[in-house]
Length: 421
Ligand code: LLP
Image (cartoon, rainbow, N blue to C red):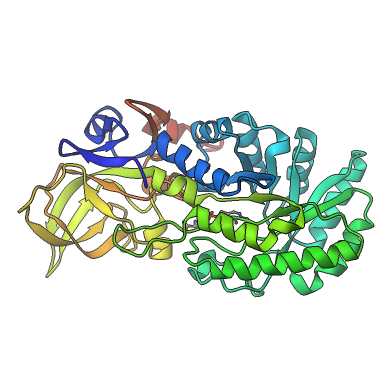
């Protein structure tokens, strides 16, 4: 459920008309709903009620300071994957003890910054990384809290580019090697082993792969405890999918996911962490765009928008489907037509949808891409020197620009020209 609904014939974000946002901020622009962010965070938090837990929002999904502050105020921790994300989380006021650090390529500077600033745990993905963390921590006279991310060799049954839990993927330590690496970790001077981490992929619409992975984690917990390790925390990753169309089958709910967690690892006496990103932010954001032209091609009709692949890369990159709806609600009897929906960037890949049946639109009309809050603005770029797309946060009947559209001067002045030119 989200808070983007038609009211009096106009699509609103909570109580704010998207016509008003387009008029004041311009297009394209991302618009987020505070109520939806809040609702989705709470669904996870409540699904784990009764067991010690922390919901660590995977901030790679949408990392604007205002979004982080909104979630942190509800008690969220953060899952970060770079020094930049760590700095962003800290800048938003998230204390180090609520930040977990994931990712296969943590650099020495990133590890040091996290140890200096405070960190809940590193989710370690390889032996070389383990050795590096130990060396850096020992040189600072501390022990770094770590979980080892295990690769359970489970097929997440999702898009190949976002599946991470198969043995051929670059992520984690093969589960068959885990006991040996835990033994190695326990002997290192700068390491304090506290638990196990797993993350098998994103946009999972079936609970079975989670169940398979979490059962393996439960078995591994028992085996490692037998080996003498104090396994007290399980980070179960993110990945629960969202509905991208109004009509398709609904993916499992956070409550069902929570019940699965309780069923598989609930009796181990561990503190549980989860790292959802998409389900918290995805349906909490839309991309607002305007039709520039309707162009009649050879047997095709193109809807040319002012948003492009640099603003929302998911269709070009993952063949992702986003519902695209008119901001003015079509009335019964409104003509429908079939469009190829494209942006102005000079690549054929700048296509949001092919042969999409929609209510008929004309130049100047506004549309909203639904479910664009996760992996939308964060993956945008200034390709074709199109200004980085702005972001707007709505709360009840007011809205604020939380990232402004840069001017051409600002964009150009970021370049520096050597003196010999
Ligand atoms: N934890 C780890 C270690 C991850 O790698 C990810 C996502 C998450 C948590 C959050 O997963 P979520 O709950 O959002 O599914 N750009 C792609 C998605 C990439 C996901 C990468 N890792 C897309 O637009 O579909």
